[in-house]
Length: 76
Image (cartoon, rainbow, N blue to C red):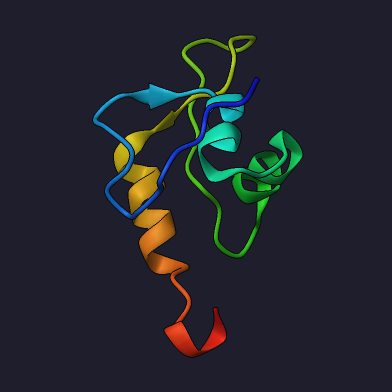
C-alpha cells in the first residue's frame, strides 16, 4: 500500500532519500526518479557513500529541483 503525501517545494527534510522514497512521495515510478538523476541538461544531484552503495538524494537538493521545475498555474 502506497502512502499518500501532499508535496510542495519544502516537503523534503534535511536528510538523504532513496530513489524509491522520492518516487513514492512524488507519486511517480522509480524509473522517473532515475531519469531525473541522469538528466544531462539538469540533473537531480545524487550521491553514493561508496562505489557500490545505493544512490541517495539530499532533501534540500530535491526541494531546489522541484522549485526550479515549477509550472506556472495556467499550465497545470
